[in-house]
Image 1 (spheres, helix red, strand yellow):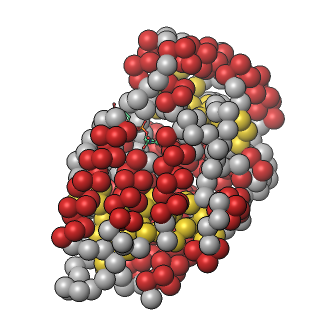
Image 2 (cartoon, helix red, strand yellow; image 1 turned 90 degrees about the vertical axis):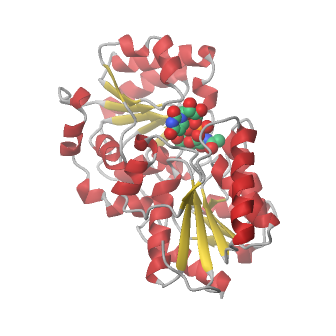
Length: 368
Ligand code: UD1
């Protein structure tokens, strides 16, 4: 990225999976504006063009300085491979500070290497807790936060969790949500014309729902999938459902017969602008994603989250989200369709488009 003379302090950012990219973009931009030399690593956890490259293009992210090319694998294989490659890299070229994002395997792997090399570590999206350790992301969050020197929180509840875990308050900064910076920066570009590039949706008119499913607890077992597919079919009886299919769930959803329903429109994973344009124009969203709970909250789109818990409760108290079971989904969809989209809705504090700048300020304060 930025050319740095020898001995100039360099801030390194580690990204790897789809949800990292919209979080990193505003932080890189804000630190660049302050004149910091930076390097961007892509671990290669996500590698398909439509899970990675298109996000770099649409979000004007700089080309990564390095792609570790780890690809898919078990948790230990993925995490361990990233650790081995980052340790080699940073033993030769020592960062002044490393910034990690969110809760994916790339995040925790980079956090462990950074910490063991004695390099300052900043975690963007610190303090979120689902209190459900069956989620791999919850383990990643706990470990990453424990090791971080600077914990950058998106919401007040996250700050509270860190305080209860005994994290020194001087290391915690409530900065708001950088993913929402990215959303607001592209708000005016969202529009249904973006969907012209998705031929499967050409005939879609009137109200529709958007669905996404990829959590292991929902899609890795045929038993869980059977209930969810029945619920999604009952949803599609009421309203057309557009479902960008995550590669993890393609096989299971196909076997369970979801795509045979005439009102279910399966599409490949979409680019950032195409997906948010689709969400922005929808009557409601059904999801098990974390980030989408936040994006629907800001767009004012009702969100039904197919999970027993959420690490983002602020999207329920201050947003448009609610948790539903597979059994309760069809009734919740009927109620959401009857109510329509809200005319007014709340947005959590500091989800205002300026989190990247606050993060840059906090990082700079730590380095100085
Ligand atoms: C990962 C994150 C999850 C995040 C999600 C967003 C972890 C533990 N999980 O889950 O928190 O919500 O990303 O998408 O880090 N695959 C492809 N092409 C790709 C990437 C993946 O085909 O570019 C397929 C592979 O079969 C792979 C599977 O998807 O085995 C799962 O990928 P992986 O990165 O392990 O986890 P996700 O389910 O994507």
